[in-house]
Image (cartoon, rainbow, N blue to C red):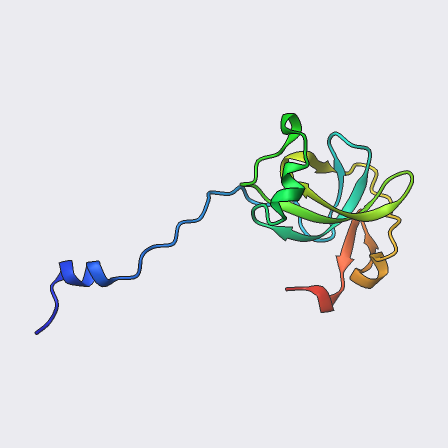
Amino acid sequence: MPKSPVELAANAPKAVTAPLIERARFGPGDIVRHRMFDFRGVVFDIDPVFANSDEWYDAIPEAIRPAKEQPYYHLLAESEDSSYIAYVSQQNLVADEDGGPIDHPQIDAMFDGLDRGRYRIRAIHRH
């Protein structure tokens, strides 16, 4: 005997809910600058929402702690003193107006050069 619509609905897979997120403002190859701290970098990956450890997140002072429900960017970053990999929320990034190259030892491994203020991602690293 065929099942009624009520029985079918009761056995249907439950819908997955995900947090509402903003659209990513930056993409791989974009050069960005931190709003509060003096460093800039090139985007090489994006998480649609926070995807780091709770310890990392809790180490940010509460007064400046960004929301988790927004894009987070992985950057090859540079400051006046060093180069490193940074993980930064969208609310803390702005487009870099300088447009000059980023001084980071991994740039050549991930990108094919700078073109009109944006790095061209190597084909091997495209999703």
